[in-house]
Length: 102
Image (cartoon, rainbow, N blue to C red; front, side, top):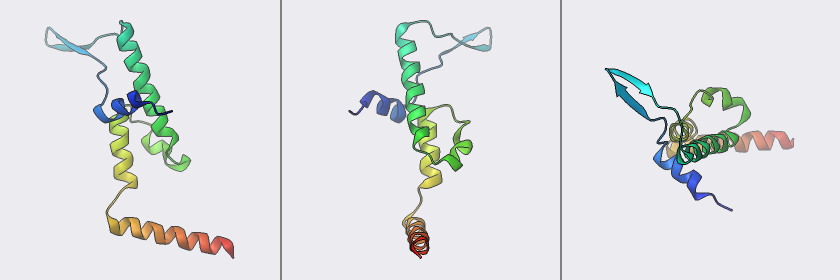
């Protein structure tokens, strides 16, 4: 089953935390409503889901990113690339596979 609400959080970003300007100082407002708590749970679940897809040796590089939308962009930037990069990566994987068969 696909959870589309998680994908919406990843694509659109989190609406939390809410801030308020009081006497020139930005104050982070605490989460009080049930709707805000549900939104926060979705954000955490989306981030955890994305982190599960990252190989173990790379997880420390992405662990500091707390927003699911920013995490997805960082993963795309790190593991994506242009066609030449992808072709090189495929060739390296083929070579590794062929040497493992020997």
